[in-house]
Amino acid sequence: MKNWLRKHPEVRTIRVAAADLNGQARGKRIPSRFADKVVTDGTRFPMSVLNLDIWGEDIEDSPLIFDSGDADGVLRPTERGFMPMPWLEAPTALLPIWMFRENGQPYEGDPRHALANILNRYKARGLTPVVATELEFFLIDDSGKTLQEPASPRSGKRRKAAETLALRALDAFDTFFTDLYDMCEAMDIPADTAISEAGLGQFEINLMHTDDALKAADDTWLFKMLVKGLARRHGFAASFMAKPYPDYSGNGLHTHFSVLNEEGENVFSNGGPEGSVVLHQAIAGCLAAMHDSTLLFAPHANSYDRLVPEAHAPNQVCWAYENRTSAIRVPSGSVSARRIEHRVSGGDVNPYLMIAAILGAALIGIEDGMTPPPPITGNAYALDLPMIPDTWDAAITAFENSTIVPRIFPAELIRNYVLTKRQEQRYMEELSPEEQVSVYLDTV
Picture 1 (cartoon, rainbow, N blue to C red):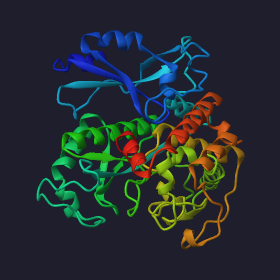
Picture 2 (picture 1 turned 180 degrees about the vertical axis):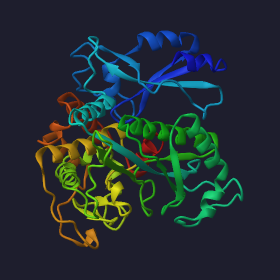
Picture 3 (picture 1 turned 120 degrees about the horizontal axis):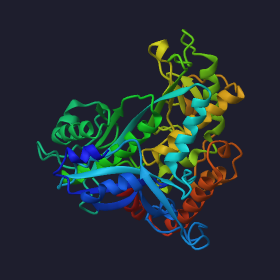
Picture 4 (picture 1 turned 90 degrees about the horizontal axis):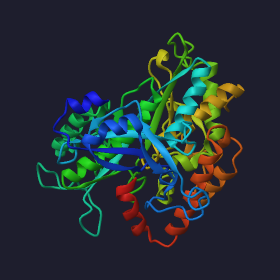
């Protein structure tokens, strides 16, 4: 880690940052001459900093604050190490960190540790998840009272309608995307295909699969940070919020995963199109936990504007082969690459909690030998199926009272997350829909 900075003497300041429960980067700016001390000794935040609401305010009834004296946690560098922050004007390095207790044990309220714990459970069974994410986002001109697509830097014109998979839509922002891919390479974020999507000014970029699910979550978290920062440098905004425009599809964040055994074989494949028993067990686990863990896939008030029928987002608990109306899709293609696509999440999620919830649920299905219901065929929206919670309040209640969520997440994280969402719910009820959009536009 220290060698990276020595190779980049132009870097005068660093940022150290951890993800809080909302996926917001919380950290410090430090002169680079003190970087060695941070690498060796870590740094300190109050543990309550990872449990702030979406505005960055303390949780009023949190036992982390006054009841415990607002004690510090020790934050140490992740294995990711230093990387550039190329969207800033001055050469700057970012050092991702995560939180430990004073005795060296992981802090149970840190979302990255929650994912690491799930991966350790896979490892104990000789299994390794392979994960990839697909991120949708909008480019937005938010300079006026009404949100709109930015004018193309090439033509000075604005698109009047969505243009799904239109090359001209990508070409209109070619400089932005060229910079984005260059910066992803500099940050070791494996950006793959870009397409224009169904919303006005909406795009999607896929991140390549990896057998390091922590890196997949890191990549997703860092990519969101990069896109938002780079967009501002280009004179407009980028947002991953679930539903910035009521009349267009929202932003999804789909997750693909398979599982390897110790021989490197995909345990979801049986050599045929139906997939293995283990695939079906993992699907059953994902379905069993979906209702109660929806809060992690749709964490904000705005999230539920996306989860409505006929809006390219699932609202029912079901699975299918090659069917994009279902919540769980088994894509076609090579049978040796058989995998699950989990389609519920919006772009506004915390990727550590999202991936932990998905992989944790799949593992429960494998551990318990669960069997899923038959796959659906046709339009899921037209079928009578169990429903995903359709309101924020219902999702919070389901998460809080669940019996399966505690099999995935530690009690402290569940408590902290519920307290956070209940506080945000009280505050959001005082705001108009337009005011809520202004809150979420830059934050999520």
